[in-house]
Image (cartoon, rainbow, N blue to C red; front, side):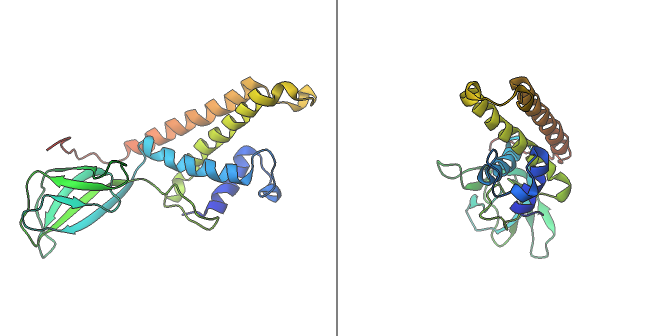
Length: 214
């Protein structure tokens, strides 16, 4: 795991911000870099890089819908007895249980016997909200560069927007300017590497198969 401050330090190397200027860089502000990191982590979910998770739920007679804490996508369902032995693999789906898609529930095809354990194995999103520089992520260390690649692309898109808005007013010598094509090239390279790396990582996820509806 890494803190937001550590992630930003690594991003600084990618975008050329000196460590001494982390809090004062006028071009890519600290707030902009921190937000880009958060957006990079959020992009992992859309790219298919998901955090594996499980939740155990005590079954209740005549109940086929149970609330979930964090799981958004289903891998498989298991029913365990009091000795934690697998007795069945029931069918079900995970679906939003409100109109905001912020909370989820598992809906079974049919109710289970009471006093069993329904084990839900699935996936949730990696942390993408950092309350402070000391807040930590939950992405394995070997994959930290993936969201930073997206953050890099986001920051350079901001520079491209600034160029489009203010570039014609710049009076700096041409040798000190970055062309639009060069900025686009940097963005494209970061996005391409992000897409390739996340696709490779997503393919490592085990597929067990679940019905789309019940």
